Image (tube, rainbow, N blue to C red):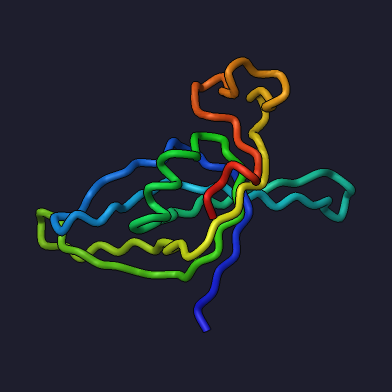
Length: 135
């Protein structure tokens, strides 16, 4: 079984493109952070960065509703692709191909829906509630 579930914050605004066949594809990075105390009782933290790829309708939704700092839960599968660079060297990228997504809340520093004007956040994207989301 190839299944991944990640919860984290977007490290950048999603980038939406279209394939030559017209399919939407959206990419962004997701930061997941693990926190623990070491043997001495000192707080430790490690952040991992994941490249997320969404296709078609999910890609359009990500582009419309997500921004840098958004907290989401992603379910998908690990995929590794390869290509040849200009010098003929084989390069590899491991990505998470998104199958489902859930909004987990607003990022720190953005206003909540109850305190914003005209239902927008400080970055001019709509402030959403679960009832606003079309899936």
